[in-house]
Length: 246
Image (cartoon, rainbow, N blue to C red; front, side):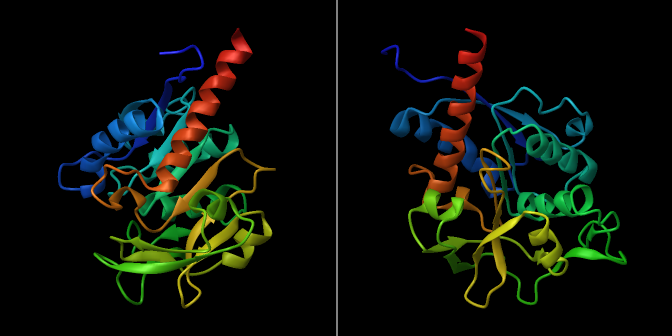
């Protein structure tokens, strides 16, 4: 392999790994396909949500991916991992439950909505940011309209995409407050409901969250553009670290 080769990047997979969660079983094939097809080599480590509670749990990784599988065993661990990635400029992807908790972390720690909650974790919460969807998306495919000029558009290369879901919860309130504090809602369904969120590059090198599950695209042999984009961001982060210390 030439010297322009590939920088192996480290990826933190945050979630409670289970053979019963389809997105988890897809990860090995996706990693193999990224290496073989795109020469994006990721050294991935699973971090259970309880282990993610420590402030250093994902520090030093080149990317963080919070995977589906909620309710997580430790909401606090997931939120800590997301906060570390957001505050320290570590490339971040959150899918399904990762999307929901990325919004929750932002609401609490950036917007000051300290009582914002996830109804799956706290059904009796007074201020649920994430609530049951009016129509469950478990097992559904549906179109997503993507905002022009967004990270989501640059990643997908399109203003519209059809994606697979396996979720029953989504954001319900405080969206104007999240937007006013810098979070961009870059993808919506045909009824205008938020399905993608991101931070602009002036705030973060790569921070993207999707309610849909890009890891379920196809059979896993052709990684979804969102997954490839995270892998590229991770290898760029790794290369920057090499330059910094060389």
